[in-house]
Length: 147
Image (tube, rainbow, N blue to C red; front, top):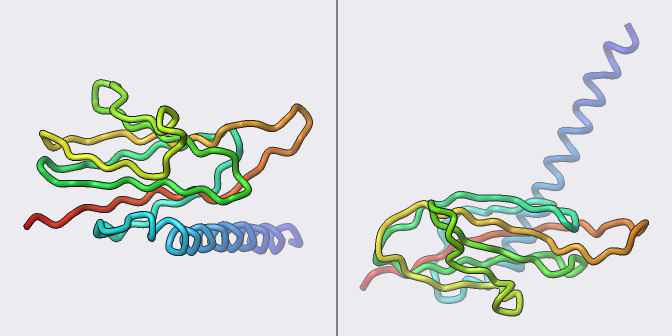
């Protein structure tokens, strides 16, 4: 009988902790990453998650032809470099910020509409036995309005 009461309470705490972390990451995205979009119009979506050193996340997004876009990637200061790659449907790397000194933004325009895959990875610099750093990483998208 007692275990029947403990399990729902434990589940509630786990869900509450997850919601709190998501809210903190969304606030980080709004405060730190949104300004990185600069003159581009934010698409209205906030993509953010807590990542640990060495961990990666993937996101698929459709982009349309003849529009100018900006991708902005932001990681909390306590994290090492955040790498992001953009791949097309054939797994060709269209861009890697590793080749651009870990730039936080990439501006581009596509000749044809297509779905691209974004891979975000937090570099791993910790020594064996050290606790890896973890923190919020945000991916945001902006576009320029056609004139």
